[in-house]
Length: 282
Figure (cartoon, rainbow, N blue to C red):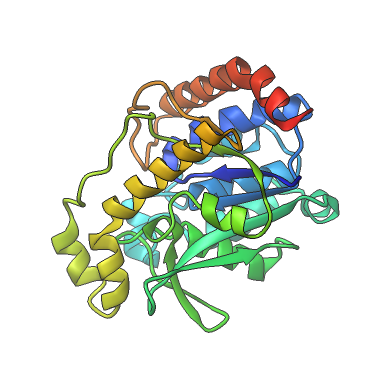
């Protein structure tokens, strides 16, 4: 039995995920592998490096720093979340990511990005978290409209949530048969068609297949959540979700709001801790 953890994205809704996973780490819950999408990737990597508290710490510390996330960064660099700052300066100098622990931990770590040319998801196992791996991680979190496409290994990539928001089927397909899924929307949430699709048509005009995926993203997302809950009913998936909408901006800069959502995640982590332990056979 391979135990997996599947992490949805959602930008700063990911603070909820960080709260849940920090509680899990603090209580010694181990997985054989993790797969993260967008914020689920950029925050979830701290599980493999065994650094509870890191994601909420640096998000609060740098929430007001234009280099981290701002319109100024978007204008100056082409990315609202500054690539140089977020994927080099921060993890290597300001809040150091424990690369050695990451590499020595046998737990597998995967991310999902979207292929702009094919409109299909691309899955990548990140083994070293070196500069090359971090480029893939950046690709997974490169939100359309506020990010440049990322070019790596012959791909042109954008945010993984555009094509596979909750990659439970993929994880099952590579052998993970007992999975915990952390969502950042309540169980009753249904995604509606994107209201910015007109702007998307302009932004993605070079990539018609990815545009088609975005037009139908709400259909994909709702089908994936239905599948997740079907697997939960069958007993091989444990689903964790906020009890109500988190009410936080995707690019939230208020440290108090980040802390609020993080604490909601911690409270949920404590609430489900024993049931997750029983589910995983811990």
